[in-house]
Image 1 (cartoon, rainbow, N blue to C red):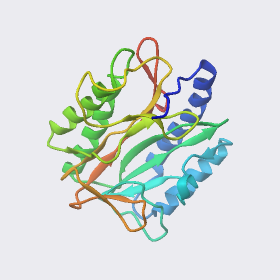
Image 2 (cartoon, rainbow, N blue to C red):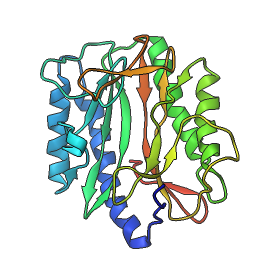
Image 3 (cartoon, rainbow, N blue to C red):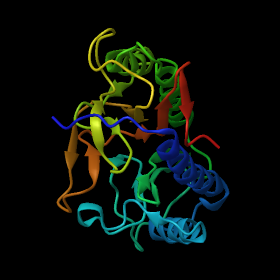
Image 4 (cartoon, rainbow, N blue to C red):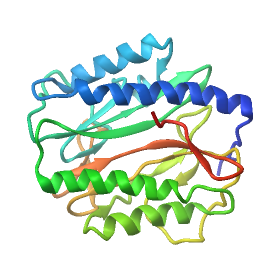
Length: 251
């Protein structure tokens, strides 16, 4: 297992800059995303915004990924490849996962957007998934363990009848997009790695309306729910501080 890298004040400042840019990108997409645009349109806009900050997209070319953002629609959970042929319609939901690189340090965040008017059931899925993210963040503080964060997501989302994806999880962030430790969205309180100041983790609930089981499409990237149910994904990069935590990607 790789060692967990604790961040210095200087490193955290660089990450704050990258994370602030990412937060601005995700915030601006709230007015950009509407029926009739394509997932490629979103990707082009993300690239334009990140470039305007004089930064690089964290995902572009990462392990061969072709986009600046992962853009996932409806039953696509994560790692959706932007496409000119995928047009959004009213009633859809679209998850956009974005990161920036600033002076060698990474940010990572995601938000799931409604497209036009969505059903009340889908509204509930988005609301509960986002709320589960903040329930988890409340557990990010010195002395707590990864299991406390994981359990917060699981217990909250499952209490509304939703399911937690097992195959993908949150992770450390820093000089690499994915670092130790892994941060699952299910687990037992009081278990796992102890949280200490200087740790930076991506907390990212991935919640399905149906079964927790997922599959990867033939493109080797896009993850979809096995039963075709809707799914949602919200993510923040969070630093453990002396007194609790700081959400670095919060607007």
